[in-house]
Image (tube, rainbow, N blue to C red; front, side, top):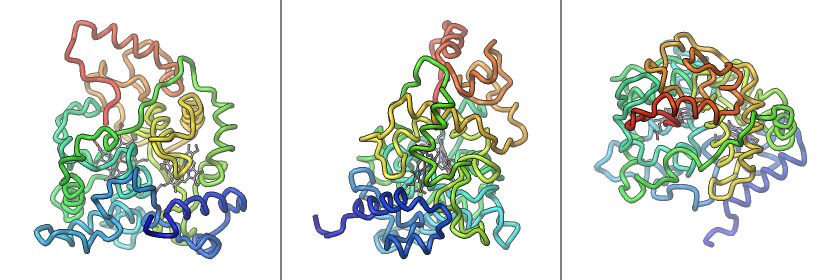
Length: 356
Ligand code: HEC
Ligand code: HEC
């Protein structure tokens, strides 16, 4: 090992201090003086094994070949990491308020979108255009980006020809430039996960949340802002439910997507290669979080124009199946999946189910 202080050392230090001090009122600067680590998205490090090392996002500018538009790629990266500072709901220029919450894209697409099993953007350009049941259309990259702007960020779409959109796509193109990584399963979607054949136990979920998650995300899932006086600086620990987070139409609002994300990435520092929680634990926590309040965007009943392609765990109606809304939210999902399978048994080319 080249460095005497491996990034993991800092991570462990942060985790130990966070857990032992249990001081949720601490400001980022307090974190910094206690841990020597400034806790912003740019300095979160995962072990090399979990990151696409080819893309040295720490030194983005210096490492780009001359042939690429470094300024544009760098702006794309900035938009992903400092989302709320550039296009958040409280930025000074009201015309730039595209995101409706103060999350950052990289709160869910970890390490600048290069961490394994966190719906990474490595190779993402090779996955689009692609048909999505969610809107019943072939989606190009701009549409997919705007999907997360409208749902995960509870905001409004970026104009297709804006500098922001071009920058995001330039950044993704750079992250898709190593053909040896593009089709690797660990850089696409989440770690393998299977829901137990029962409803999520939300009481147990609450207990597990207080054991594994509360210390960072708060008892009410409220998260911890960098600076309460200036929310556009975003979160140290992002909000999980409430008004300033992803809305009910987002992928993360589906119990199986949440559980798979959490299994592979949480508590913070966990790798998909070595999960900390079992599938059953992740499921119960996801069920508990899924029962909390979050923003509801307009127009959700326009989703899944072909209702027979609606995933069992989509938490909002209308549904064509006979199962109660609560069961879509917290399971058991197997009977619902079986019902749709039966419905479509004569259509062998079915594309429904978990989709990115
Ligand atoms: C709250 C978590 C969350 C946030 C914040 C978020 N995303 Fe996503 N994103 C997801 C999830 C979940 C998926 C996969 C959707 C699914 O499985 O249904 C996804 C998928 C994507 C994909 C497609 C990936 C692929 O491999 O097909 C792109 C591109 C994307 N997001 C871009 C963004 C951008 C740009 C932002 C910020 C403006 C953003 N996301 C913010 C959760 C999030
Ligand atoms: C040590 C602190 C810590 C702990 C403990 C922790 N998280 Fe996180 N969590 C984070 C950080 C930091 C991020 C944002 C990651 C980034 O930006 O790189 C995050 C992101 C998330 C996100 C995506 C962003 C959002 O707002 O939805 C979810 C979901 C999440 N955590 C759930 C959980 C759950 C469930 C647990 C318990 C099993 C947990 N976390 C435990 C620090 C933590």
